[in-house]
Image (spheres, rainbow, N blue to C red):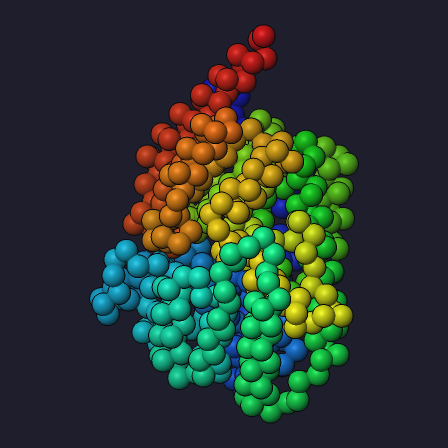
Length: 422
């Protein structure tokens, strides 16, 4: 192994501004009960956050609560509490951490936030998620709205699929009017969608900049700072302006030839969510090899913006339906995910694919063994598959992970040296 690579002190305006925006959102949720403002629980995957915003229902995301508790090393007692209540040990750890928090009488990471007024199950591709939100509605006493989004079966959603989802969005609007006591204004939704499209354009541009050598940020580990604003705050002026700032900052780094590391030796594409309880430890295992993720599938779990889709204020409900049907990672087939990763490897000029398989998420991780074989044998892309969990610290074995990662990059480095000597 050659000279060690370290993380450069590069965390600038993007990181700080993301923290400020997310803290302001949590504070707003914390005041909701006092201010008598209704709240609505949503899932990140292909969500319709713009619609709730237009209906004056504050959006909240149990997944975000779960991952923030994991980062704060508070998830295990909550998981154990859910298991003691009867949840299986191999059930989704996000679900158990969230339900454990409810059973503990709380809501929200750190500071408390109110229980949701309505619970909108906007993603039905995972049966565990459906049960999660049913239990959430039951425990919190909130109104449950099951938004049935058909799984993507064709490259483009059919007209019938779009009409089907739009008709449910209209029913959701009626429910929101009931809980908020305010009439829905389609022009207000159009304005919100205009801000959403601005944020989507900025996020796509940030990702495009990672085609540069070196990439200005890590599109897996650093992308988390942009996933909050794009998934949770989409549709607000603040989120749109955040991405204006992010683009300017990353364009500046590209112009200076600066990377998040002191040296970019390997460019990777990463598949799968990160292990939030050991986020920094996991990152360090790649940093020491100079490995920078130039693209990741996880950063598209709420929406795929880099291929050009934007919400359209001229077709407000139809474009929301199209995004829910097609433009999010988890509503697509594993073969469509193959195509997405292949484009990343080719267009972002990556050296390798890293698959982080999640022990407690069968939906996301099923088929990743075949994925490794396809990319390694069929396409000749060096591929590493490692396993832990996104929420449950019991499944993170650092020594084993380090051995696998070190062996993989040693082989990759040797391959580069041999190729350079020819």
